[in-house]
Length: 211
Ligand code: CO
Image (cartoon, rainbow, N blue to C red):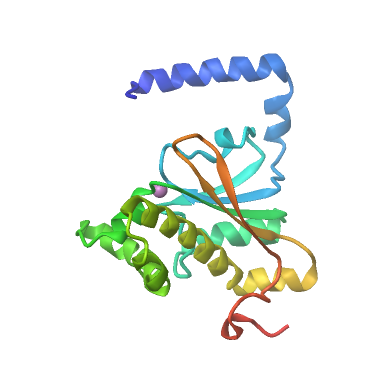
């Protein structure tokens, strides 16, 4: 699907027309400020846009995307986004959304070199190492990749829970809940991995900060 740059601007104009026809005050209201209930941590993959696949509009979801939806504790960009979402926007839910067939996850599952990217993929290889026995036992490569995608989402959701300022937020109240989802490119459906953490109770003790 190849589009010209001009088509993007034309598409923008068409979209504005469409939105204002159904909601005349839409942009006026949005310009006054944002109060999204959700933070989305997803993959940069062009096929997994947070708003379209959840049928939401601008204003609904605060978004951070990177290759393979990783939560890396030295990633100042991600941590700043999470901090702002939690401390200022007071989002009620944080969703880590991976997707089957994720190029980053599959690259990390292989032994191929990807140049500079190898450094980022190392974080994903670490997830493999934690679940090596389970993953190595899956003979079918596609199935192993799919399971690796799920385990990576669960691991990144846990990585979120390890953040001290998030645990601090849980001391003061119920929110935010951390969720793990996987999107299927084949049918467009989201699978809820049924994790919904709003405490550090499920973490190894070493990651549980003192109240
Ligand atoms: Co991906």
